Length: 263
Image (tube, rainbow, N blue to C red; front, side, top):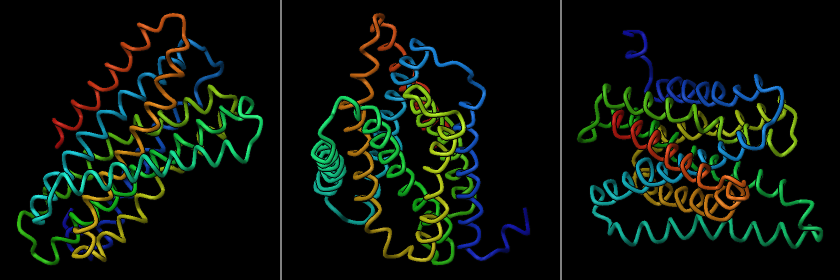
């Protein structure tokens, strides 16, 4: 890995975030191996995805936003309130605009759910990519606590977490009638923002550190809105709703273990 260590910091950030994007693609590729959509399975995956997103909202977004706010001498509850409500209000506004532009709401409900799911996870990937970029960019500026091992582990942890996130998009899309190839394409494309935001984060590391806690909270608010408004209600339409709720707990537990063990 000596060749990697000798690369410019923004090139390191690009390679690291390309790795996390490829893991997202790998997770989304699960849909390619599913020939027939089973309602019980897909409802379980919706519940599972909801659990993943709830856990990721706290452990990957809100908790780091609190820590980063404190280190930057910001007031954490103000930062989180602005960011969290901002993310939720963005999707709330988009939800209302979608309904207004589409009079036949019932026929477009599936499309709306797919769009909201993709937007929320894409928003989640932007600050994650920036966080990786900041980790590598900080090495150049000698920021306290910055070291190469920590940057490696951050990229590895986010990459592993991206696997179920890719599936969290492609599987619901398949459930709602998209072809396997289209569901895979849309699932993996949500991760392409990570290399872009990673390079930006590395190049603007000093300024972006002030914005990052707001962006983390913003992504959390967007994710929680989708979970409450779309994923859980849809999974609970299943006759065995108690089993679907159990899958939500399983999804939360898995993401919690990944975050805490790799954090």
